[in-house]
Image 1 (cartoon, rainbow, N blue to C red):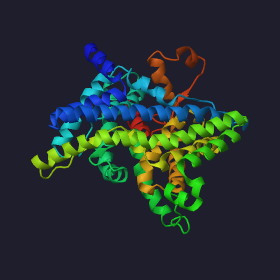
Image 2 (image 1 turned 135 degrees about the vertical axis):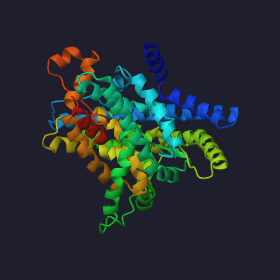
Image 3 (image 1 turned 90 degrees about the vertical axis):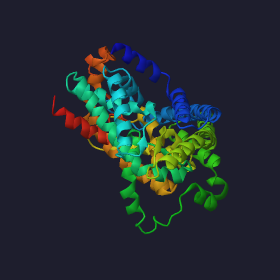
Image 4 (image 1 turned 120 degrees about the vertical axis):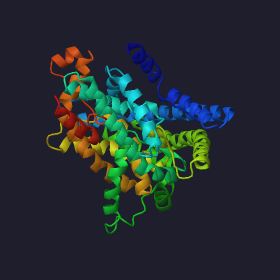
Length: 422
């Protein structure tokens, strides 16, 4: 078992920009895409992902200090420390990770064969969401590995079912036929958006307001162009953070760069992934007339529309301010702001790129995350402590929280369910 654990940990340690191309190449060969086409598509997808993460990391690293400065200037403080994607350390380090990965691979294949899901969960990297939850349950139940694995598998199985419900919308809006995105809080954002957008579309005035990037550009001309809009948003946040002229000018250019470059990175991903997914879809249609298969891909593929980052930049300070005023919320989201673009990517297909509606949906969606991240802080902190991380600080009263898994809506209820066995 230890050998398997080490092998899984080594493979997952390669990261998504390596894992995704490897999996795509293997899929291409299995489904007879052709060696050259499979390799070309896999590597191109990896290049696009690497470029996209560089751009996203650039803007997150630029905006997080500005938002933190804004909060400091306003005297906003909270008790718990936001670790957000540090939860990946729990996901790939808790004792049951190998058992979880093998279990969900087998169960997903069985579900596809038995026609219980259309999503072939090939995005192995995104198993980390279910594995992090499994680590929380492991800690919550006093170190019960079996219950941890069961909780993680349940979470990932439900993720594949949610992918079935959202895949068509993602495919049509992003022009990526054959894909599915089952991962974590991203796909949950789409399900949350469905009823909220239905209501927003029936509010007089708001329902007819064309707040898409195209509509903004048409109405405001130069100011509505992505680069200029990003520049202005960066200026506003920098000034509100108390930055000097040099700093807010630099922040404005960083946001403008992101608005222009990020969609082009997604187009590179599409260039690589679409030929492979289309070949898989065609293969299934020829051999199984009644089957439709969605190939699971990283949620980063949803970030290409200009409305995604336009909405995200607006949401960063608004989410911090909302967390500050909500009673009982004990974590100020700074590190967790990084998840907002991925939520926006899942919401814009339903708002049809309307920036105002996207902002409203995600502000509402963030509220349960703020409370659930507070309510799950004990199991969250215990998982780190049981893995030997932050031990000294935790013994001194440090509490660790996050949005992406600590505040996960589905994950919260699964924790409560399995907590009955503790």
